[in-house]
Structures are given as C-alpha cells and as structure tokens.
Amino acid sequence: MIKRLTAIKRAGWICAAALLTAAWTGCGELNEWKDERLGLTAERLDPQLEDRWGAKGVAAAKVPPNSELEPGDLITHLAARYPVSSEDELEAALKRAMAPQKRFWQIGAEDRSDASALLEVERDGETIYIELAARKPSEWKRHGAAFSGTQVSSVRAGYESSQSLSPAEAAGVAPGDRVAAVIDEDAVESVKAFKKAAERAKNAAQVYVYTHELAGIKIEAIRAVGQLGADSPKALDRLLAIMEREKDPAVRRTAARALEALAPSQKDKRLLEAALRRLSEAHEPDVEIRRSAASMIESLSKTLGAKAFDENAVASAAAAMKDSDPGVQLQAGVVLSRLGERSLPALRSALRAGASLRVQDIAASALGEIGGNAARQELINALRSAEDVTLQLTIATALAKVGGTQQLRAFLQTSPSPGVEEFVRQLVESPDS
Image (cartoon, rainbow, N blue to C red; front, side):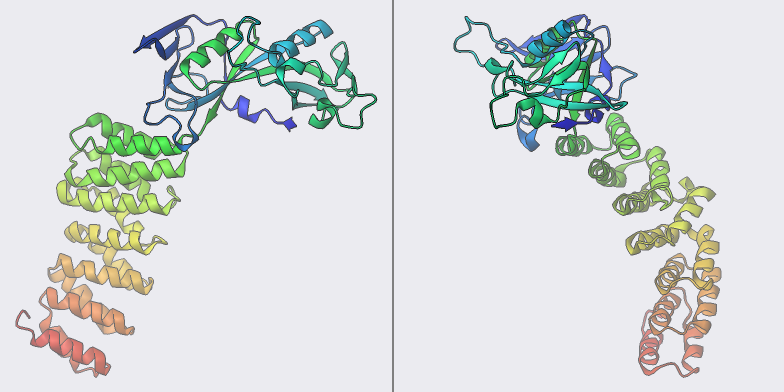
C-alpha cells in the first residue's frame, strides 16, 4: 500500500539519542517517561480513559517547543527513520523493522513485530511512501523484492513460479524504485512500550511520533475543568485558551459552553473581552460558539454592570444584531437593553434603517426595556411608519411599558387593522397603563 508521509511530518521529529528518566508507581508499572534533553514527557492515560473512544497510546504531557505536538495529544506510534545507502544497510533496516523481535528463549512471549516496514521511495523525481508487509515476522525475507544497491531490481524474487502476487507487488513497489530510507513503526499502547520503542530506535537518524485526535477525551477534560467553578483562575485561563486556539470545533464548542456556565458568577473582565471577540461573525464562523459568546455577554452584563462595557463593546453588541443567526440577534438585543441610553443610537439605527423585521422587532423590545423620553420618542416615530402588523404589535407593547398611552390613543384614531386595534385598545385600557 502506498502511503503519504503527512501523518509523520505533522507531529515533527525528536532525536533518538535522548537522555531518559522514568517514573514508576504502583506495582512496577511505568506511568511516565521523560526525555530530559528535548523536553518530551509521555504519560499514561488516565485509567478511566484507556480504551475509550478507541484511545490506546500515551499522552504527551510536556512537548518540545519547536514541534507540532501539543500537550494532551494522544501518541499512538513511534516511527524510526533509517536512511540507507547500500544493499547491506537496506537489508539490515528491513530486518530490524520486519523480523521477529522476541528472542528464541522467550517462548511464551508475544512477538510485537508487525512484519512490516514503511519504505521511503524515490520514483520519477518524487518521494512516496510504501508499506511493505510479510505474512508474519518469521517470513520477513519473503517480501519478493530484490535489490541492486538500494534500487529495486525485481518484485518477483522467490515468486517466479507462483501465480500470486508477491507482497512487494501487492504493496505497489516497482522495479527501478530507489529506497532512500526504511521507517520502522511501533505501536505504543503504554509508557513502557513507548520507552522500549525509543530504545530500539537509538540508532535511527530521526524519530517521529504519530498522534491521534482525542476529541472525546479532551471534551471530557474540558467539562471537568468547567466544573471547577468561577473561583479557579486556572480553569478560566485554560478554557479561554482552548476556545481561542483549539482547532477541533467540537472541543472549542465544549470550552465555550463551559465558559457560558461560568459567566453568571464570573467577575473577570477577560471573559467579557474574549466573548466580544467571539461574537463577531467575521471573526467566529461557528454559530454555536457565537451563541455561547452572546449568552456569556448577557450574563456578564448583569454581574459586571453597564460600566464594564466601553464604546467598542456597545458597537460589538450592536453589530451582532445583524448576525445571520436569530438566537445571536435576540441576545444582542437583550444586552443592548441592559446598557441603557448608550445603546439608543444603535437601536435607533436598527429600527429605522430598513433592517429585517426580526431586527426591528428586537430593537423595539429593547427600547421598551430601556425606557425614558428618548426611547419613547423613537417608538412613537416607529409606530407611525410601521406597516407590518407584527411589528406594530411589538412597538405598541414597548410604548405601553414606557408610558406612551397617550400616543397609543392617538394611534387608534388612524384606523389600524381590526386585530391591531383590539390589541392596542386592551393595552390602553389596562390598569397598568
């Protein structure tokens, strides 16, 4: 099978000649393996997480600063690269990767060799990667490839009289290919296996690690962090970092929901600043995160008060009134209603400027919550020009809240539609008017 090396390169590489220290706990079980020289620490997965979501491997606890690894990544394989420049080196590298790993005296032991090797092949000016596998480790020599130096001279060696394909043919190896390197991949299902694989790779030119997305595990961990509560600065820092920088959408959404749960008891203005950044559709394409951000801002408008919102914050909330999602629009309107008269210009614009009926409806309701002469005058002007029945009802309700009974009586003289007339008449005659 022909492979691309992207899975290897994405994780960067680490030198095999590392100084090793190990942490042992319990009954001799290796829980941590630390690479002092490069700063890579591999830890055992939490026992409750092992084998969940297909999680087998070790967790990257501390990573080299220049690699693409991130703390929390699940390391599933270690891959050692051996460049070859002669037929003897090629044969030795294939044996190292494909031949049995257990010794003859280890009768009952499991042979961890998978009888396969990843060939780094140069073909027609390109580099490709081909997985070559024998049926079992003891038959590793029966791969069917013959070499002249490092160049493939045949893929039928030992299969000349057979009608079946050789493993080399089946994998896609072709005469004329030049093998530049052999890559030996080891699965690392425990810290002990990771340490052993690294020791096997001590003579490799480069050592790579393969990582696997741990969305399920990360989500569980984020939920746990969110449950630490508002009094944990570290929890807030971690959740903000995940929401801002994590690539996995599901993980980011979970962090946003955890922050949303913290917001009602949170007094740290950093959360408000982060939520305002995520509220913009231009900067945050994920609608679920925008909804969570709007909910955070709504909660923080209660706990922090209107004074915490500067003019840029008011402008951000006003811009969210134009969001493509109705839920974000509605919550933005609620936030603006709590910011008082500073929101009047934005709400006036939303009510007048030919915005969608939904936005006009939200703006009218917000003006009704703010109250005061300026808000009442905006509602009076809007009622005079409104043609949509539903919008008329919303404006009338808002006017009733801000003491606009006299204007509503005048509106009844304009012969509105029967349904609107009856609704407004009930508002005017209500004891609360």
